[in-house]
Image (cartoon, rainbow, N blue to C red; front, side, top):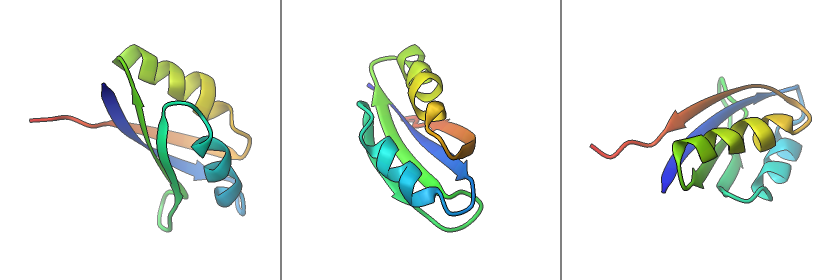
Amino acid sequence: MVQAYILIQTEVGKASTVADVISKIPGVIQAEDVTGPYDVIVRAEAGTVDELGRLVVAEVQRVPGITRTLTCPVVHL
């Protein structure tokens, strides 16, 4: 399994709604509203890096209210 944190910036006032919608997407482990430069942080997993990319582009980035995402794959050193 490949896991990643997805850092999300949203339109003003949309963080809670975005986190709620994303939390229902298959492959999303957790979605939380946060403060700071990002509004929502998501932990997601997929079978491969390609599947993870499809999850981010085809599912997460389509959620209304998102303005920017940054995907940070988890590495095991």
